[in-house]
Length: 96
Image 1: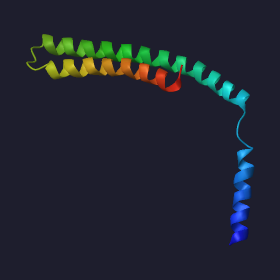
Image 2 (image 1 turned 120 degrees about the vertical axis):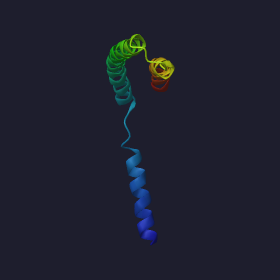
Image 3 (image 1 turned 180 degrees about the vertical axis):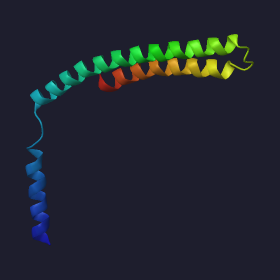
């Protein structure tokens, strides 16, 4: 039992030397920064297209005389608000 425990501790000690260095961490941050901004720009374009689609849907329902469009307007507004907050949250989370 003691031999297995000693062997396990030796393996843990060896795995500590296999951690990535500072150069690899800088490269990962650089890759994340480049990918994040392209994905972030794509999400803004998609949010714009979906927002326009929602606005046209609400306008159509309003013109057709639908009585209760308040829920649709609120859902449309909070979806847009969520997209803005999500972008700021992701920037703060990744430190970009």
